[in-house]
Amino acid sequence: MIIALWIATGALALAFAMAGSMKLVKPYAQIAGQDRMEWTEEVTPSQLKVIGALEVVGAVGMILPAATQVVPWLTPTAAFGLALMMGFAAALHARRRENGTPSIVLGSLALLIGIGWVVFS
Image 1 (cartoon, rainbow, N blue to C red):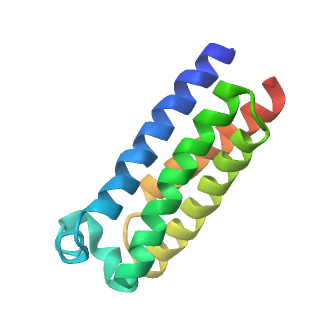
Image 2: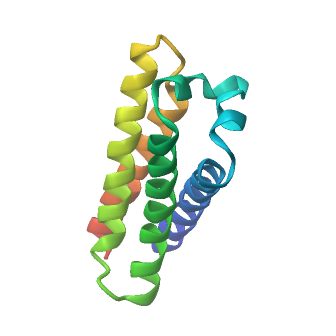
Image 3: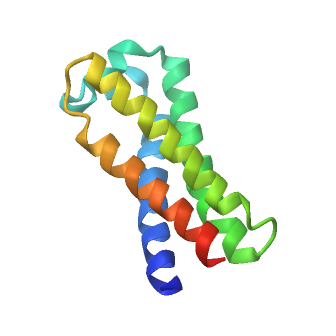
């Protein structure tokens, strides 16, 4: 079971690292112009960078602590933090009457991974 947990954790961390890096590296105007990123109208450029940084930090936090066994309780904490972020993202999409399914799926996966690390570590 722990192998499946590592695979799921790695895949989700990769997804958040890629999404967060894109938000950190690309200019706000370029991101806001994308079809699937209409929600960026609701946030300032600084807020978008903070969201990206939190996603990258969360991704690193899901992998490094468990892999190094240095403060391993940070792994489920990072997963729960990302789940909370996705809860806020889903609420934003609902308020804008947009499809929030990706946020709900990612948040649910992060929640399950956090629970998995609590149970199996």
